[in-house]
Image (cartoon, rainbow, N blue to C red):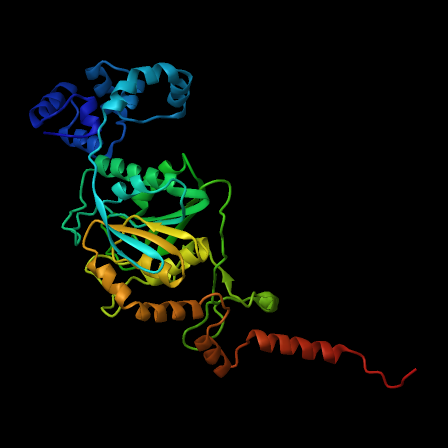
Length: 408
């Protein structure tokens, strides 16, 4: 049995029909498989041959493939009543296979469920969540602790993605924020879904240089993190700042700030949409599971930026539980769910004091122009600090003040 939207449009259901269609249309089997796997519209001679063989127009083929451009959208909008009369029956007959979930454990601030995230989201109250962070499977043929291999067809992965993303949109409060962590290739599709319902804020690139180079490709060195809000603007945006970049050997400036040094904010440099300081979790001291694990630093920044104490944070893909640990420490209410084993997440909460120490260290080294270590290094090598700049400025001002030799 051969599946895929493109093959369905061509009425191809098995290998024999694929071979026969290729023979009649003169389009290579490899090309037909490629169009089916990628779900894209053929071009050039292949497109001409397909249209001639099928006896349909380009517009009809696009519609069969689910490619809706603005002209097609205008036509559907103008004839929406007629279209709905035609497809209502089909929509009503679509039956989703329901998953299950159950409460696994509770903490002072959160509830952890074991089971299917779609099942849990169906039971959650609409517009009840202030912040959503999602780190879904990447469809990379990896086997997780749940025993599930996440490698499915592109069409199946995107259909599932649209389901959970749409449910997340329903859960967000007005002004609430959603962050989605994924490979750039998948975030291009997720962004297309989100653009229909939410307001784009940022595509954040997180630089992680540990993936192997791929032949005939640019070196993939970052993950993408989408940031959207419901409504015109976020309800919460707590600006995050980073320490100044300095030479790690002598502590000197890397950039020349000239006469603007004194104008630098002592709370640090504004955070940009490219993050270079998020390390992958590799060390066994910090890594709690075999699969990829997100850094506490990443979640501390996201949660601190887009929520306040008492807000509700939801993560539909529990993984190792990093979102939940950080939410607990930062006094956010949280809701979590994981399809695989949750014992590892529960164990992290039993060792939460270890993570409290990590979070304190992260916060001590953020929202400041120079960390304690940076200050020591710069002072030892005679480099400026905010207080020395202010002191020099005061001395200069004092020197320029005329001295009165006589009182009037």
